[in-house]
Length: 193
Image (cartoon, rainbow, N blue to C red; front, side):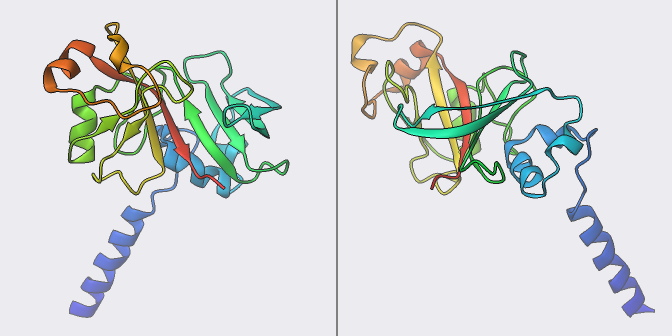
């Protein structure tokens, strides 16, 4: 009897872990889950309501030509998928910058505050200056997200002083952070080549 009970608990735990994402699952709007949906070739099945626009463009500061798809173009839920190659089977990057439904599994979305990022990272973060292609890029600073493929870009709500511009890690004290009122402006899942 005890063996049957233990086997039942194991099967129940396994069933809870592998909750299948369907077209009605709110988890379909988490970047990490979207990556799995694409790997399973279920994009159109899980997002049947999504209009998908496609094309080819220059990325990586205009140095690499890659195919792309846009889910929900010109809506709050717009998401850019940059593909590794013409087969469109493996995403190179997933990117969103609107306050729609998209987030990461740990809750990072457009509008997330600097303080919330530090809490999610379980430690302090650093960020690059503004006014260039990777404006406000976050450095996870050996925190919980340091080894993740999640890339986040900040924007100040208040106009920053000139010393906060450029391709450099910004040295900011808590008063600077408070005055800038930093928020996430874009989120990317980057698989890289």
